[in-house]
Amino acid sequence: MLHPSPRIALIAVLLALCFPRSGQALSLQEGLRVVTGQGRDVAIARAEEDVARESVSLARAPWLPSLDLYAQETLLRYQPAVKVPVGSFYTSQDQFLSYGFRATQLLYDFGKTSSSISAARETLRAREAGTSRTRNRAALDFIYAYYDLLEAEELLKVSQEEVVRYEAHKKDAEARMKAGVITRNEVLQADVVLADSRQRLFTAENNRSLRASRVNSILLRPLNDPVQAEEIKGGPALPSALEDAWAAAERENPDIRDLDARVGAKEASVSSVRSEYLPTVFVSGGYDYAANEYQVHEDNWSLVAGVKVNLFAGGATDARVGAAKGELMALKVSRERYLDAVRLEAKAVWLDLQSSRKKIEVALSAVAQAEENLRLSRLRYKEGVGTATEVTDAVTLMTTAENNASKASYTLKRAEAALLHVMGRDLAAAYDAVK
Image (cartoon, rainbow, N blue to C red; front, top):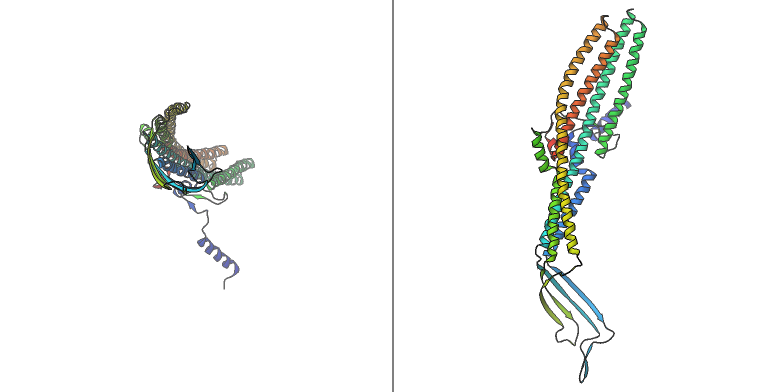
């Protein structure tokens, strides 16, 4: 029979197998699938896209026949009658039931309805671009938070290594003090720098915890859930020249696509409003029945073909055309201005990307040099030809070099994501193949 402690341990293992902790390793791809598929902002954007899709169906409605059914009971105070030279006679009952239906079909309206349909379709394209923009923004925010967490973990490791190095230096100082080579003053100095290093370690731990909570917040998980982010070795495919990035941004950036669609929608809207000057051709037909014993035919079929022209609307049509033209011009200028802004942003990110690659080369070289400098400083101190200050300075330089290397590495990764974002690439798809 198992003792209580082994039994509890066995139960804990079984629970862990059946109900995995939320702190299990999280990959970038898994997180991107969550934020782009279940995020609140994405859900709102998709709902707005559905509204625009229904607007296309609404714009098509005039091309389809309208069918009206009616039924009514008529009650008159005086029974209708007509005077004749010899007296009068009734023409209708004073109370009667009537019902029927009428169908009306638009035949031609000189492009008004087709322009409205085009405007609705362009508006739908704008909403689709808006959904793409929202998904990519959510993806970029998560990528930044994910890399921030990985960077915090690397900086935490550097802080831990710094504490270990200062602890080793303290042991060296204590050994030299026991040998009578130095005074206790150097040991106390080692204690001080070690305590200061531990303070920085606490800060690094807090920073890592805060960034983990940020990832949980984006994933709509409890803030205090443990998170273990998986390291990413590779990177997404990037253009080889800035001009390629510009061309891709003009073609794929969702904000540019949104403005292009809005320009198209407004052009179609101008055509639709202008068509109000032109006639509308329609045909209408139906069946009417009135329970009236004074009529020769109580029911009747009808067919009407007609033309309707709006001769004057108080200047409303002219005003709507003028307003639509002004809005169209504003959209075109906005498109040109925003394209310049996108190109400028792409150039800034491109330059940041290039400088980050150079910084990594310099930082890695500095780490190797700092490591060798620390080794020699410790060796000189142990042999009595170096000072404690040389060792502590070497540890500080080593920590700075490692911090710089970590920051440069993740600055590069964030710049890669930012460039893809400004180009309009689908970030979730771009990172799906990255390991």
